[in-house]
Amino acid sequence: MTEVATFAAGCFWGVEKAFQRYFKDENIETIVGYTGGDDSNPDYKKVCSGSTNHTEALQIKYTPNDKINYPILVEFFYRMHDPTTFNSQGPDVGTQYRSAIFFHSPEQGRIAKEVTAQVQEKHYKGQEIVTEIAPAGEWYNAEDYHQKYLDNNPSGYECPSHFLRW
Image (cartoon, rainbow, N blue to C red; front, side):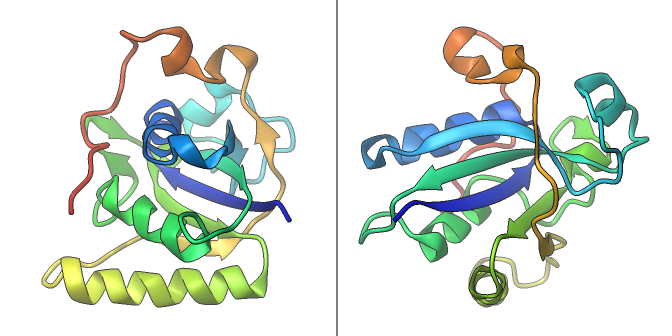
């Protein structure tokens, strides 16, 4: 059975690429888009202006197994970005770059909170994780040129804060 996970961790190009690289053998399906805001017709220019409160996000469709499941995805999300910076990742600053987990069920919400507490205790003592954990709202696909951007533009911009921390 296919499940959906939605994460925001800065520029969606780099977030997508990080998940694609790490889970390349797990047949994941990724799409980038906008969520978490209050504009019913967001586009890249409006989202970047900060006027929509949407964030650049990644939606992942996957089939859970021993190598990929929701707790593993949430932990990887924390490994590949800095969850202690408010509305920014590296040089990218603004509400559209905030760290967020948008859960699709109460079970995902519970898991996201549990994994966050574990990661806080184990990896971020002395620094507060500021990741937003909220129910998934309306999803808006980003424009076509953003989809698989770094696959189509191998020398394109990739945020320097997207790397594995442990």
